[in-house]
Every structure is written in structure tokens, then in C-alpha cells.
Length: 409
Image (cartoon, rainbow, N blue to C red; front, side):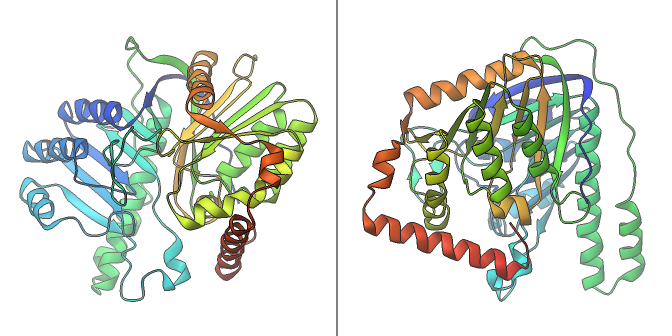
């Protein structure tokens, strides 16, 4: 079952590019927080600019603000001892989503990760996107980067803030309930499960729009393993199906299922210009090689593919018909691959506004034209046999993982 995400008017929306700008905006909000800061992230790293955000959470908790932090058990794991101690002294409460335990990822249920990147401050403003708490110029596996990774987030005020806060609060109490169950503290577990069903009051956004914010119609898309199993995928399918002129998608880990591939191919064949900005630098064997076998059918249909190689691409965004009367744009954490669309908890914001769509569209086109390499269909067909073998192995393993999980894609 999947519920549609309602789009509401009156939001104040700002597009943010890159971790440096994102940290600056979140830190400013946290430093002004009066009552509560809630944050979820897949990766919380403690290098470079990310440390500044950690210090902001520490300051907020020390002055009496309630600070709830949830990190993923794979992306982050246990916090460094120094920071775990600092957070505890200040009063930052941190929970780890689905710790791996002894057998780790050998258990298929542990493939369900917390991949969304969300923050709510005082119930009045929210941040949502693909940006981890990880310095733009640093990668845990590759060290210092020559250029910052490409990624986006949105800063929002308005009705969707309540949606973000409710889903974060529900997860928080569920994690606490599970903890009580494991400790055989069943009365507290029951209280926590009851709290997970709470409904929080929504506070209307301020009427004054900040200079760099846009008043726009917007909504929140979720993917979880309960009510919103396919909400993000269905939103993409509907938007692609309604496209009339142009589709631009930037996705770090791109391995769309049959329905999404068919939707993109049909759009290209009916005359829509379809452009994909995908990962061009080797990061992980599976994600890098598993994507390549799906290029062929897309290229043959006229889909244009560019691989971003200025740095690592981490964006999960799309723009459809930015110059039309019904523009559609999304910024969030969800890749178009089976891990995001079938297993992980994800969150995207959808914005229906020409100014916002045009802003995101300009940046993506610039990235494709100036920082990427276009894939030539003829060259793709002539790629070396050893590359084809690696591609097919990765693709086959990914399909096997989907089968083992018991899901269809």
C-alpha cells in the first residue's frame, strides 16, 4: 500500500548545494534552536566541516535544547569514543538504527537501512536531501578529494515540516521501544509504542520569506517498509509519464527496475528529451558496474547519458518540464536502485514551482555540459570484454540479492 504525497501551497523553500552550504544553514538553525533539534543521517563523520555541525549539536544540548540524533548502524556505526563522551556530557541523545550485531549483513533483514537525511528544528523548519554529515572534500575510503562531491538538499518551512517531524518522532519512539523490549522492560516498551503514534501540532510558516527562499507548492515523499513501500517510485513514474518536453535526472547509484526503465524509454520515444547524469567515478564495485548493463536499452531509445567525473556524484534529484505550466522537481536521499526503492528508509521533497525547478535545472545542465563525459552509444557497444564481464557479474549479484530478499523489482 502506498499513499500519495499531498502537495500544499505556502511553503518557503530554498535549494542548497553541497555540504559546506548545508552545514552552514543547519548550524545557523541549531544555534537559534529554543526547544528541540531532531536529526537523522546515514553517515555522521567527524572530519573537517562535519565537526562544526557536531559542535553545534553539543552547544544546543548544553544550553537545554532537547537534541535527538539517529545514525545508521552501517553508514555510521558506533560514534568515536571522544564524541560519544562529548555528546553524553552535553545531553545529546544518540540512537543507532539497526546495529549490525555478530552476523552483520549476512542477515538479509539487516539490508534495510536508514538512508534518509533529515533535520527539524523547533518544529518550524526542516532540512531534507542527500547530504550526509560528511565533509564535501573528504571521503572515508579515498581521503581528501580534489573537488567537492555534488549533492543537494532543501531547507523548508511550511506544512511538510510537520510530516518530517512526525515520521522522525515515530521512528525515535519505535527505536526506544525495541530497546525496552530487548531489556524486557515491557511497560516502558508499551509506552514508547504508544508515543510512536502521536500527532504533533503544525505551526504555520512565517509570512516573511527570506531573500533566498521561494514560496512554493511542495510535499514530502517517504519510503519505508510499512505504509509507504513504493511512494517514491510511484511519484517518479507518474511525473515521467506526464512529462511533455524534458526530463533531467541526477542519480548517484542508478539501477532502475523494469517499470522505471520502461517509463524512461517510452518518454524518449514519444519525443521527450531525457537526460541522465550518473556516477562516472569508481566508488563501489557493485553500484559502479551493476548500472552499466541497463545503459544499452536506454541509449538505443534516445536517452542521453552523461557520467559526472569532476568528483563523486552523490545527488538524488530530478527536474521535469521546468519551463512548463506543471513543473516537477524532487530533491532527497533516494537513489533509483533496489537498495533505495525496496529496502531503505528514504525521504524526498517534491517541489512544484518554476523558479525552483529552473534553478535546479540550470545547475544540472551545467554539470552535464562542463563536468561530465557524454556516453556515446557506439562506444558503449564496443567497451572491452573484461569490463562487460565485471558489469554482468555485478548486475547478476545485485539481482541475486533482490531474489534473496524476497522482493520483486
